[in-house]
Structure formats: structure tokens, C-alpha cells
Length: 270
Ligand SMILES: NC(=O)c1ccc[n+]([C@@H]2O[C@H](COP(=O)([O-])OP(=O)(O)OC[C@H]3O[C@@H](n4cnc5c(N)ncnc54)[C@H](OP(=O)(O)O)[C@@H]3O)[C@@H](O)[C@H]2O)c1
Image (cartoon, rainbow, N blue to C red):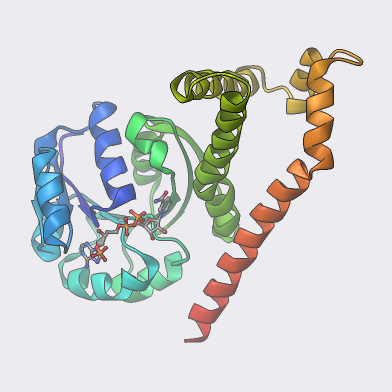
């Protein structure tokens, strides 16, 4: 792409996005501008070689694509700062959890809008990104979908599924990593040092994910292939289930979802 992208909010996700855009060779450093408000974050991003500014209005004026990536409670201030500089020739992409397309339109105007839910694996082009949009033509849809396709996989969803997408796709990174930490700690208890255990865990989990991605098989079908009757795998697996593994994971997801929906309902009442 030969235009500029402004990423407003150079935090964890904004920086992961900038890294992913570079790693996927879609943008060069000169085409990306990140903004932030904190001096130490600005310095950190400058040290990484990025163009950084604390002036959102200026960044927006230069950009064809404007990504809003601040915390939900910071959305209104950011929208106030930039709304007078946005035109309908630009495309707005929001990663902000819980802020709807209608809220963005009400604050910024009737411009092409995307609400996306990626995860931090954007930085290594392995994100899962769910996308909903408003006021966009086919060309704009194609442009933004293809931008995220190059940084992992994308799924177009209706906006009412965005909370579910947040929990499974974005929080899901933390859920999967906590499982990996537990597996790695178990590996240490039975004899590996932490580096070895982490390597075996990470490559094994990656292999399990790739088996599902490449074959489209249900996980249980792959589990069947490694669980011999009266064998060691089924004994361990059943013990994990007795201790509530599946139940804990499902309950964790539902708890996150309920909390997100409760927060959204509270915001809508304000
Ligand atoms: N992290 C994830 O995995 C993930 C995944 C999907 C979606 N999201 C969503 O994406 C958004 C960003 O997440 P994050 O994890 O990157 O949050 P974050 O690390 O807190 O990053 C937001 C950054 O924006 C800065 N900021 C605040 N107001 C600003 C303004 N007016 N102009 C420019 N910068 C401003 C913040 O500074 P201060 O800290 O000083 O306020 C902070 O450095 C959130 O809404 C989050 O829910 C995150």
C-alpha cells in the first residue's frame, strides 16, 4: 500500500499492529505513524524506529487509514480530538473493545468504519481478526480485510458477535498461554529444565493447533488418535477432566463474556 496509516494509541495492540504491518511487508516505516500521550511510551516507540507523535490531529491529517487503539474509557476524548479532521475519504478502523460502530459514527461522523477484534499475534502475522463494518463500499471492505488477512486469518461477523469475538479471539491468547504455562510447569516437575519444558510445550501446542487448522478435524478426532485404551494419555486426560479442565475453560469464557456485556450495558445507560 502506498499511503499512510495512523495508529492512534501506541500501546500493546497498536504496536503489535505496526509490527505486523511491517512484518507482512504491506507498509514501510515511513508510511506508519503511531501516536501516544505518554513520554516514556513515545521514547520507547522512537527507539524501535517508528515515527511517533503526541499530536493526533496532525497524524490523522496525513493518513488514509486511521486506527483508533486506545482503552474504551479513552475513546470519547480521542474522538473529540480528531473528529474535525476526519473526512469521508478516510477509513476509520477501531480496535476498541465495547465501542460500537454507531457510537463511533455518532462521535466522528458518517465515514467508512471498521470495528476489528484482532489479538497481539498481529505482530508475528498470526492474529485471528474478526471484522464488522459500516458505511463501506466493496473496495474498502476488500482493502481492510486483505490488510488483516496478511497478518493472520480474518472472519467477517455481524457486530452483535463482537463481544464473543473479543473473548474467544483476543482474551483467548491469555487463556491459551495460561494452559501452556501449566503444561510447562508440569514438564519441570517431571524433569525438564524450564527452557526445555517451554520449548516442548510451545512446539507441541503449535503442532496441535496446526493439525486442526490444516485438517479441519474436530479436536476430539485428533485426541482419539493419541489415546490408546488403558494408555497413559487417556489416564492423564481423564484426571484433568476430573479436576474440571473443560468446565473451567468454558466457565472462564462465559465469565469474561458476561463481564463485557455488563460493562457495555452500563456504558449504554450513561
Ligand atoms: N491488547 C490486546 O490483546 C487487545 C486485543 C484486541 C483489542 N484490544 C483493544 O484495543 C485497545 C488498545 O488495547 P491495548 O492493549 O493496546 O491498550 P494500551 O496498552 O493501554 O494502549 C493504549 C495506548 O493509548 C494511549 N492513549 C490514551 N489516550 C490517547 C490519545 N488520546 N491519543 C493517543 N494515545 C492515547 C495510552 O496511554 P495511557 O496508558 O497513558 O493512557 C496507551 O499507551 C483497547 O480498547 C483494547 O480493549 C486489545
